[in-house]
Image (cartoon, rainbow, N blue to C red; front, side, top):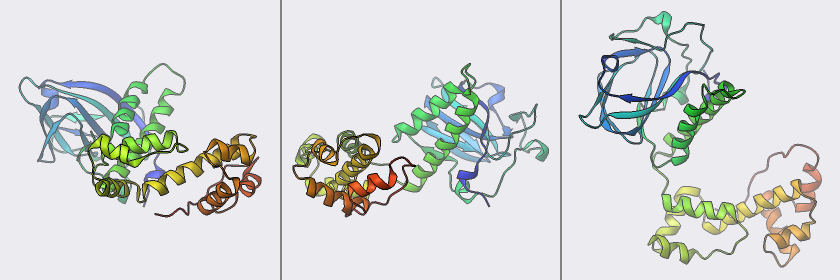
Length: 295
């Protein structure tokens, strides 16, 4: 039994394609794992006889051996980024990607399929428009694969492995993250030392205070104050390891008037005082630490 972290990803092909109703878009069977991200047009797909409506932001995940076909709406041809991949092995030379005009697969042509419960959780169809990072990364992989750059094949394969883990996280979230809260998180992440006024965000996005806090907790699992403190202490830990600034200087940079209060908050969140953290980790690996901030 495998986990996604144990994948050996190999990309057979990654490219853009316009579906115009050619004969090759009718029933076919793939030999590798196929991912189709539609970015334009409307239509339907049949996978193993089941109908899926597709359009901008639709992601289709088709497993080896599954019969499928593409059907675009008249005047709305489908544009997609497609990735055909092996996930557990590097195929032999001359391996074909799919067979046309068939509803059954030759087992000898199929890529290796390991038992992987996490992979089994991934749906055949998903809308990933609410996750622009996943959309952008998928498109970047298609652009990188087959380019003339050094290690482009290896980088695209590794990025695909990361993308699959991101997709798995999206599926586990079960509901899209609210874009308004995502913008707030971006602001906090960029400058956790800033003094934010949450009423400003409520006015900007037309949210009542209680609704804003409910949305924020649903995305992060903690209050805005606790999240900002966590990010501030994350930045502090990086400065302690990556710079020669004194603890006092770091405290001032993060907006603290008192080094004692900074040290107390750092110890509450990270688990040890800043001087101890620097002493333990300086010169070695960054190590890992658990956040103990309030939720």
